[in-house]
Length: 128
Image (cartoon, rainbow, N blue to C red; front, side, top):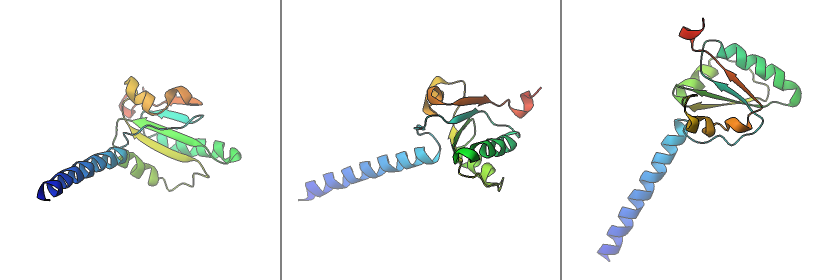
């Protein structure tokens, strides 16, 4: 009947919107990182590229590792900047998440309590 089709169309629209919002949230780096024994880098600076390279070289002997970066930048922007390094990470994967190192919910999102090491980068303007 027409009423059933109308209800079905409304439900389909709601489900489609919910899926679209979830995909957008994942793309923007808002999902939780389910890792343990990872290296967590808090913040972003021009030193990040050389730090990532050094960590990848250090992880090479164990077949790679996981590095999680939490910074107040868009996830896509962070991933593009890291891709510009044109460096072979030798099995180490880099996961970017957008958020503030000062907000507990954002720290929980990157599994701060399960990290093997935590590195805090000073912003370029605060490096002194």
